[in-house]
Length: 130
Image 1: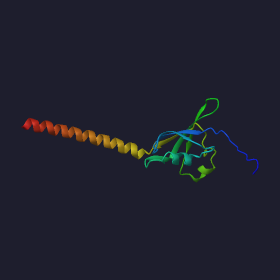
Image 2: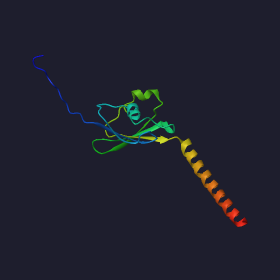
Image 3: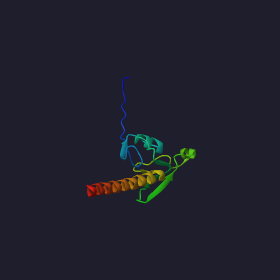
Image 4: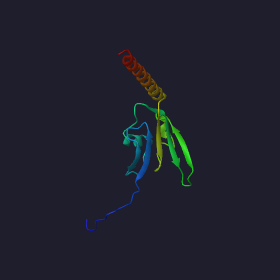
């Protein structure tokens, strides 16, 4: 090689945000030209056990500032052929919890409240009897 050639290119980092039932929530910046929804979720540590994989949303703004919400079912094999399989820089991925988690959290809250009230009444009764 008498005349080596060096090529350099400036690459804008790919940015997206993950919210909801993901292991790592927040903004992600990766050195990629193209990123699909599954790769983006994997980079964010994956989804929690409580994530509703059949109802993941992407919030996307176009050049004119118009925002659209795109619903995806990650369990659908046809996702791979969807025009929304690949993300656009600036997308926001929202993974909502399964309804079971919301019900479970409410049941724990109610049970804790009841146990706290019963415990408080027991303490009052013991003090009154002594």
